[in-house]
Image (cartoon, rainbow, N blue to C red; front, side, top):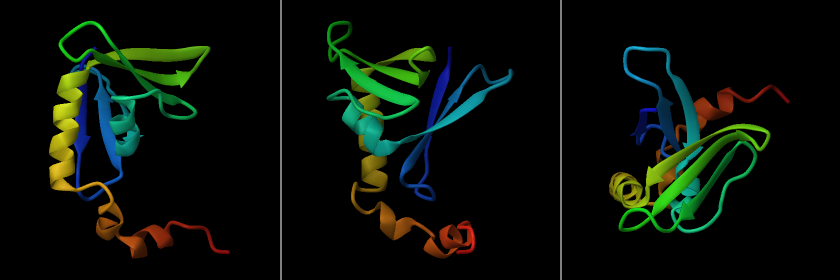
Amino acid sequence: MTATFRYSAADPLAVEIIFGPPNAPQAAWYVSRDVLISGTRVLTGVGDVRLWPVWGAGRDGQVHLRLGHPQAHALFTIDRSALIRWLSDTCRLVPPGTEPELLDWDALTKLLPDA
């Protein structure tokens, strides 16, 4: 299955992963960039998103990405070194820790229900 990873400074905390071929129905998942970074080193994630490194295949191994709950999920294998390079590019665009400076807090608070 094809997966396209997208990152934007407009939504600096999330990575959009689009699954499926370009000319067919696709599914999008949003995953925390921090979770992806951690998943290249250790088991991480909660709920429907889990990542962990798998050593062996390839120079730097792979990363498994599980989407869905344990009884009904999809498991994807990602080249670890390619993911690390891509994540490094996102970190050059928006250094870790600076994400809150880029968020539109006024727009976000308008999304909250009235108290």
